[in-house]
Length: 416
Ligand SMILES: *Cc1c(COP(=O)(O)O)cnc(C)c1O
Ligand SMILES: [Zn+2]
Image (cartoon, rainbow, N blue to C red; front, side, top):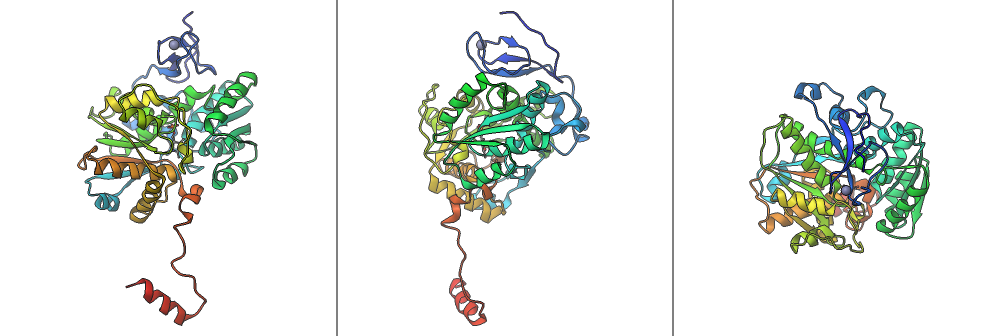
């Protein structure tokens, strides 16, 4: 294999195989020709200061020098993703009996999930590489983000989703125009089909042939947590796990910040959260296996319903190296998690956020996470897209006619 050098894209210098280290040019490829391992962006990071980052835009582009994008934030055609709120969750902390708790609330992104971050980086590279169509295999949120970003950037979009998605994710994709392909099958079927389509069409599939760039967008969650804590690392982070990419990139972000001298080196533990109905990474972790056995998903947490997670083994590595853990929770617990967060903090999370809150509570109950550890919970999406999960148990307290007497009579029954 020839060692290839291509022009750098900002600080990104190559694609590099995560397994054997073979380097490739920064084009639209994602698997190693030598060993089929996944490719990852390799950087030569120069020096970056806190002041440089702080003077950047209030979006993820404040970290552009650490991403595989051509420098020059003003020209970016996409949606302004990132720099979402880090909320101090004192009420939830009290309810759970823990010391210091934060919620990184990525429902504040343009299409209301953290997927706008990954799409933003993929889109920049789709344009750089001359694709006129962007595409994706999605569990829902990615479909929203690709359709919206495509619309704004003036690119065609073709998104593929399982046909059993929540209405709140079909409507919020279709509304942006573009082509929406609903497939009678699960995400893993959708993904397999997309790999075939990607091989025959000159489309930029954000999470297939552009996946190495896409995945880097998740680092910005970790950067923001560290910056928003006042340039320091937390003791623990609880991340949802679908493909496992986000979890690994939060770790990568923290390590880069330490290497760049932007934060002090501080031990942190990364925890993974899955729904029991799709918990292949949790099952591997809890049975001490390195190999992830694919499952057929069956859970209300559809955004996390990936039965054969591409980055699962790397997520296991991160969790083990940082002395974290992975656990999973039932659909009932997911609903409890959504409601607990809503009722304590006024944050309405989607099912993935419910998975995180419920998994954190379970880890606390089982004594697997230190209640004294300053912990950041990642809420990656908005509850308005997964109303189905809480609809049956979220009804008006009373339904009455517009009569004062009736109100008094009924209200006195509920305030005892
Ligand atoms: C996609 C998604 C995730 C997880 O992403 P991975 O990087 O594939 O593990 C988490 N939460 C929500 C809401 C998502 O849409
Ligand atoms: Zn390789």
